[in-house]
Image (cartoon, rainbow, N blue to C red; front, side, top):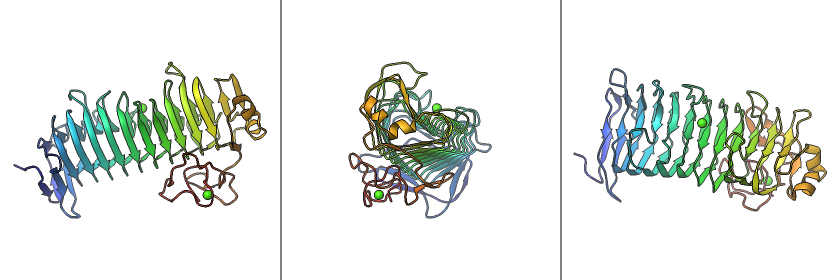
Length: 392
Ligand SMILES: [Ca+2]
Ligand SMILES: [Ca+2]
């Protein structure tokens, strides 16, 4: 029996089994299951059964590193509740969940108790029915770094990572969610921070932030089917140095929607600073029921003729790019300091959202609240702060 503080090394090969991890370490003496060296160890559900490996209810201080998990009809990996202090490093979970389940269910129906203080680092969750999910009100203090959610396409609601419900204190850094059938990042809890992350080519929304006290910084949301960024009613979000471009590929929609209309509730609070919005099919920014707003140093560009740049429903007015440029937006709203309209001159409008020289977004941002590094980790500023997720 493995003891607290010990590491179990797993040799390469294919393991046709579904292990139940039911051992706990202690504070400072974690138990680690780690694939040996550069070998590849795959837990393969073929002819094993439907449920992939599980973290047993009550397990603490456990670290899984390097395992591949594939071909389970239910979840590839499941935490069964009342778990605290778990780490998952460089896992690859793929081709799981064909029965309507997930690659990684951080919590699952039938589990019991909160799952808290969890880290994912460098994992890949791809080609599952759903990517990663959690049940309502089951997660606290989760950090996900450098993890990719891709091609999870089981049905039209299959998110890359979707934590629908009241799951709080979650940070994503350096993550990518792409080519999923549903949303890229879908978080409906409070205290959510998404930084230096990319959501692209998902068939529904790029980034959903549904709760209060949330931060979106240095993110890139592009070529998603519906909205680039959605902030719900009763929410509060601060958004700094994001690039939101060429979303609504499935048909006319907004680039960003604040106080989402289909979920009635109280007004939302929003801070928008140093963001770039480019949009080709509809109005760029919808501001619904607003409690407080701070909007400055953003760049707006729409190639849709006749479209407005800002639909300020809370003022009962909409504003064109020209009305941002000529000061009408500022005069009516009291916002818009340093904001402008114009083509940001991306290097490539399909896949490279760095700014060409001469871009109106270069050296025209605000230093207030600007993140100290950009999406790629480049120290900000170079010369003066740029708008958008890249500093040059
Ligand atoms: Ca969703
Ligand atoms: Ca600069």
